[in-house]
Amino acid sequence: MKNITVVCPGSFDPVTKGHIDIIKRASQMFEKIIVVVMPNATKTPSFTVEERVDLLRRTAGAIENVEVDCYNGLLANYMRKKDASAIVKGLRAMSDFEYEFQMALTNKKLYPEADTFFLAANSENMYLSSSIVKLVGSMGGDISDFVPEEIYEDIKLRLSGKEDKK
Ligand code: PNS
Image (cartoon, rainbow, N blue to C red; front, side, top):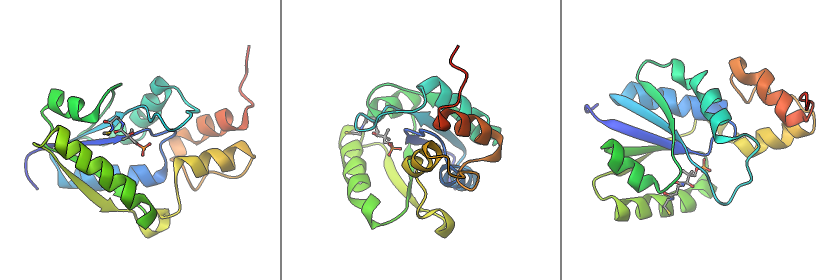
């Protein structure tokens, strides 16, 4: 597709196989992808922004045209700063649509130079979210199908609350 930089924003708390699928597919469509970790004021995080960036760098960061960053502010301002032309987001079900559409319209108003592309989630990942990973992981359930293998142990340890707290 066109020679443009796109931004893939999210809270990624933590990154899931569903996110990786969307980032991989976007990386095959666009010249450069910047995955940006942003705070979501409506959610209580389990991982710091630095930890989330690290988890993303060890997974999505391995893709040649993918860069991982973080930003605390409006997405529209970040887009302007990076001279990015589009936002890419994954859509799982209709329940995602209303919120995502509202975000897309707000971002278009604040930064008209960019459009939002929605990629339909792979059917295997339709049910998957960071919240589900956190819920299952915190109750000792198996999250190995939900998160990338490279970071599975780190996520499992954090969510189980069994980290060494010296
Ligand atoms: O993975 P999430 O939690 O659905 O990601 C939501 C996120 C972080 C992309 C969204 O909350 C966001 O864009 N936050 C930055 C503030 C902003 O620009 N909001 C959109 C316009 S109101």
